[in-house]
Image (cartoon, rainbow, N blue to C red; front, side):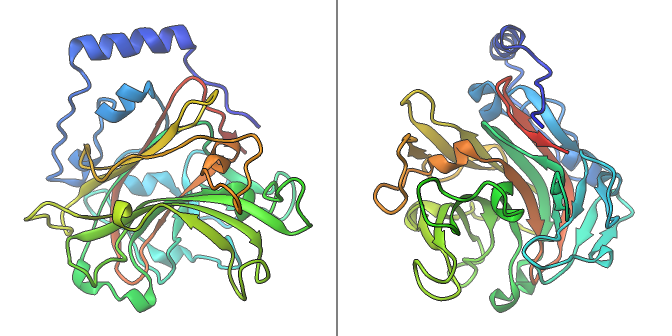
Length: 325
């Protein structure tokens, strides 16, 4: 179903004006403890600028209260165990800590998610986010434990339409021709370059699995590697909590949409801009506009290095069109 907005557009614009005039968008958050790391009391600056003032998902400390490890969850606003693409995550991968944070530890790049697959309609439990959002998570990890052969710390999103196999079929194409989207806010998969280097990527996947572009794969259009790789500032300590965020502003009425990425409220790398086309064809003119027609599931995965999660938040505008079951 569509999740109704809690603010109408007039109230949202008035709140935005108040925030901008009052300077309330300048948020400085201490990350010395788990509680402080997750204690977002103000809307992040980039979310304010985008008009995303409604907090539609919040996981404040103690983070363990925000996870439902049941195989049959009843909550729609909590983190759930990954069970997509034939992999079932175990509750033993979740380890609550005395300070309220949670350590996730598994070899899967998807450990906890905002949705979980069901075997019958409505085919998932949880939340998938649509029509734009500002996604933020605060976490830490030990980079010396990362083994790229066994996965890596990841904070990413993927189309629920692909994860449950409903709605990814591309119109006018043969049966099984899929088209879906992935947004990687943070991936520590560039560790061989430098211990401060990380990746953030936009990916448009398409084709018939194992046929259109070769065995055991889909075709993919990605943001350029050079624009999706960054070195954190000198002295960055990944074992301390940091805020990692991505901003998704959809393309509307021919105007450019964009994806932007942030480390501790500061934008990293250039914004990735696109204009969605009605006749979008990923083989002829990739545009990333498939994201605007689908809904994204949030995913946190530790891979080879346990991640300590402190908080996670989503801010959206009144036009949000989330799927909630």
